[in-house]
Image 1 (cartoon, one colour):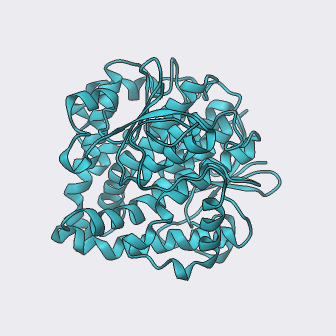
Image 2: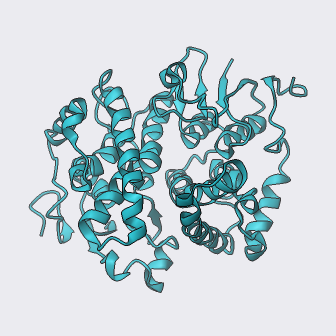
Length: 213
Length: 213
């Protein structure tokens, strides 16, 4: 059975959870407490030397790190990864955009505001994160003026990657009311059959045939 | 003919240049001056609303942004992208690592030190960038203690992505002497046939059959 090393507050962890629900694939979820440094133990660093969740452990113990690489792995052969060369590249384009221009601003601002006592340096950096996050949301708004989805004609892993932290951007101090096309797209993603919310995250073994237990 | 919107100082731009050289594929290189905001003009934003180079324009005008998505597109069907599902995912894992944990520290520190007059805020952030960059180099060093390459049994786009800013990390104040396995890997990459240096970047049309002209 697949094992997902995860944290219930993490949008990066939510990405594979959401895709696994869409794929109807069972897995075992293992919660790690980031704030208590459970991702920096020797045992966890043996799974991912970069010390971050999520990590997907395959049946044979092989581990894949980086949320968007995990999405790509899980989605192969499914409708969530386009089969055409150009659409696959554009799907990856938006996933790299997410990790470079979106997540480091929106997810980090949310983390600072919601989950930690901000240091003075973080408080000084917050306006930079707000500016960067709004720039990323404006790029998304522009794209969604011309297209319904990010990776092709239907929902793909690019949409899942971008949904994870966009739908909780207001927890990072962002006003999604400024981005109506983004708001409409968030609704399209959430209305897909098999959609699951970020929280509560399922505990233990997730059986797609029944309720999480 | 493929067109590459690029800047000669950019490691992200160097990535597709290096891969195109390995593939023996011609292209037209278009230099943009980032410091003079040539990537923020309406004309360029029509190519990439995120306002960043590199951008690869295909023959039909379709544009692909994000250096690692461009690498993935160009490498499809070549020996630089593994064909197995797991190796492809691990290649992407390292490419996302590069854009999240490596480039924002090592490339940004290099940019601040080499190319701009640092602001007070940047000067205050520099130690954070140094710490993050050294952590990324340590993760690479650990991997290279067990493997020769990042994406499989031979050089892949993951190696090209990581080489771009690692080989100039000393310009960002990093001591590569602390990472001997990284140093040996840099040498392996640079000794590949068809390798080209980051600078001088070729001007205009690059003809793989002859010298850049």
